Amino acid sequence: MPQQLSIDMEVLYRQHSRRVLASLVRRLRDFDLAEEAMHEAFAIALVKWPQQGLPDHPTAWLVTTGYRRAIDRLRRQARFDHSPDPLEDGLEAELVDADRAIEDDELRLIFTCCHPELAFASRLALTLREVCSLTTEEIARAFLLKPTAVAQRIVRAKARLRDRQVAFEAPEASELAERLEAVLHVIYLMFTEGYSATSGETATRAELSSEAIRLGRRVCELIADAECLGLLALMLLQESRRGARTAGDGQLVLLVDQDRQQWDLPLIREGQRCLSRALEMGEVGAFTLQAAIASEHARAVSAEQTRWDRIASLYDVLVDVSPTPVVKLNRAVAISMHQGAEAGMMLIDELLESGSLDNYHRLHVARAEMHHRLGQRQLAADAWHRALALASQPRERELLQRRIDEISQG
Amino acid sequence: MKYLCLVYGDETLMHSLPESPVDDECHAYGNSVADSGRLVAAEALESVATALTVRVRQGSHTVTEGPFAETHEQLLGFYLVEARDLNEAVTIASGIPAARVGSVEVRPVRELQLSESPESADAVTANS
Image (cartoon, rainbow over the protein chains, first blue to last red):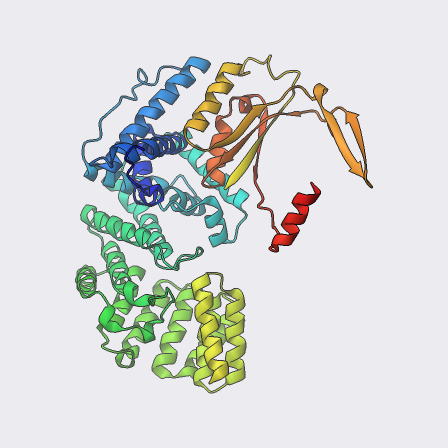
């Protein structure tokens, strides 16, 4: 039998597919063609790599192979429908020179997916699929939509970009600002999908978070913007807790129960440096404020020594800048830690009365904790069960079930 | 995930429209999906005039000539593909040459919910 390298294509796909796709989209200026080309490239790699070994630059190899296959495909098509030869049409083969260029392709792709031509919901769906490589079905689950609706949204968004002949390039400096807000939002969405996946067996998809941080760093290099630094700081500070966030058996560990020795100090320092730079720039936005809150947690030597007074006042400002129900919920929790569970419970009741978040399991987790602290055992148990009924991520459900078991025993 | 792409069209017009694909093109597209490793099966079908429809009721079976229902457009062929998600299946479907003159319905394949006891699986085999 010939010597065969054992290569785990699934791992390679996870590592390379996002960059390969981004690069092919720019070169071919067409999402669908790029996706098809990427598949052919991986199919060829599946045959060749186990025999010939990994190429020195797997991403570049896949991009070049995919690109050539796409050109072949266009030529085959031209033979049947008499469209012009793709090479004569100016789509010239170019060799992939450097990995750095490919990295930037991913950033270009995010800017393209966040094009002002597209509605906000379409930008998110397109980015989650094309940049974060979630499936249509996963996106549908995350947004509580039918897969057919998400599929249509994605098809239409791609068609719109194609019809408007949108250039798959990073926008000019003048256009950057109008897209930056959406881009930052999408990068953070990518990070959080990697940090607390909405579905799937593992609670985190680490590679998505590190990609988001890498992209955040690149945007900060390109643009001097306080919120951009704030976002990077926020991601770094949250990422610093990743190791402490899950126990050896994969179970989730809450912030108060985490072993702070396991927090990643270099990441915390880098996050705090970014935060200071963001604060020095004057304007303070929602990402910067959230980073400041994360930094307070990072600074506390133990959960007991957390400066809840400072965190509560940061939330007071944040709720002005970004008055979303989730921010209000987090503020309620901070105030319950600072002023007591009763004060927090009043705010939670207000939220519930307004009807928002009634189906959000974390609201019921917060309620359960506060009832528990107030010695209201039955109310606490009811809230835990309500939270469990609403949670969908398997690891979060385990955590909730453990809390319910602990309380029923104690 | 597996998806079935069902190709429908008016079989009397299918091969005579200006946009109608020739068999070579259909074959080439099938090959290209197969090359990308995502084709489970694909076939074009003979005319519905060749169809027989079988039904079993209360143990007795009837066979009638023709398709199960007379429709304006007929099932002309299918692609069974293995795709990452619904949008990838849609992309494959939109490349099917017959989509230019007909319609392609994309349907996710449903996993059968099998009962877990091995005895019942044996029983099915024994009866078949």
